[in-house]
Amino acid sequence: MDFSEAERRGLYRAIHERRDVRSRFLPDPVPDAILARILDAAHHAPSVGFMQPWDFIVIRDSSIRRAVQENFERANAAASSLYSGSRRELYNNLKLAAILDAPINLCITCDPSRAKGAGLGRQTVPDTVVYSTVCAVQNLWLAARAEGLGAGWVSILDLDVLRGILGIPESVIPVAYLCLGYVSAFGSQPELEERGWESRESVENLLHFDRWDVRDEARARRLTLEPCVKSKSSSQAAS
Ligand SMILES: Cc1cc2nc3c(=O)[nH]c(=O)nc-3n(C[C@H](O)[C@H](O)[C@H](O)COP(=O)(O)O)c2cc1C
Image (cartoon, rainbow, N blue to C red; front, side, top):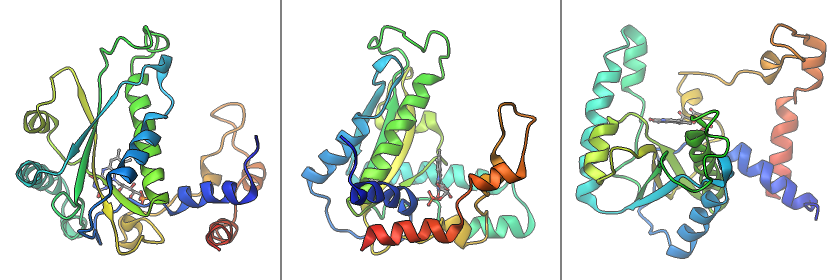
């Protein structure tokens, strides 16, 4: 059955208004019924060979979160040292994790050795196992936004140390470490854009036709929405 106009707009609104959140977390508890819905959304992601390579570790324990925070601080100091001058200053002023602020942390893992799917697809391209897990992360991120929950992805971590803290077997990949909870507000643009770190590229500059070396500005422009059209479609969805 087709989506109604309101349903269609709701989907686009979730896509445009999803944010990576690491500020403005509220301590309010997340009801299990809502956590169940977003985990179920993640579990309905596509996966190569229908392998479903993911697991979800729901982390509330504060001593575990403190250990992850220490891991982040060490990794972040190492990352910062790779920049210099004003870039480093800007980097050091960014908030790149909310491990202790968010009431829930969630680690989404990928088990490349899982038997489910009988190897279909991944025999040819092994990385599709990780791609599948990232699809689950994105589903969860969008569902969280629709539920009014913020989610922030923390990748500045030593993954072996993280494995040790969470007891994850060596063969399993911790793909995403997320901070999750209600927030006081969602930003209208990426925090990295707000802070002057990076801006959104235009789709127009990313389009090729039939072959990589064929670019066509006029055709590309016809396939590019004006920013005002996009914001109109999400504000209509809100009303
Ligand atoms: C694989 C991945 C890793 C990320 N790691 C971090 C991170 O460690 N810290 C952080 O603050 N944001 C992280 N982000 C969030 C990005 O900074 C964010 O998605 C981007 O700036 C666009 O903002 P938006 O998600 O609000 O649209 C990560 C995002 C992805 C997809």
